[in-house]
Image 1 (cartoon, helix red, strand yellow):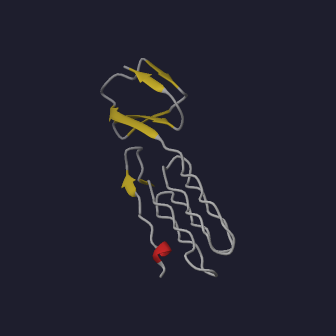
Image 2 (cartoon, rainbow, N blue to C red):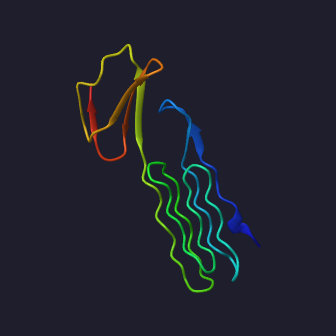
Length: 125
């Protein structure tokens, strides 16, 4: 049965100032010889391995799941999930942070101050 054709859709968020979908599920690997892997869910999910292909990693900075492996037509390993992101947003009527580390992207838009990290970092108010 084609259970590998289903993967969970992610969740849309506008915290960054525009709508982005995060945390899509990874597609399942092929269940039978000659079949394709499942598509990844919206929000960065990677495609699962087909019986003759490879799985796809989740999209960076979305937290999307990696595609599943396949045991048909020669074993194919599953792929890694996508890296995450940290976003802090608050009203721009409050003061900016006194310091940050990790080189966040900082924007002021729509009445908000937005800090985004795609790696390690810190913030001090």
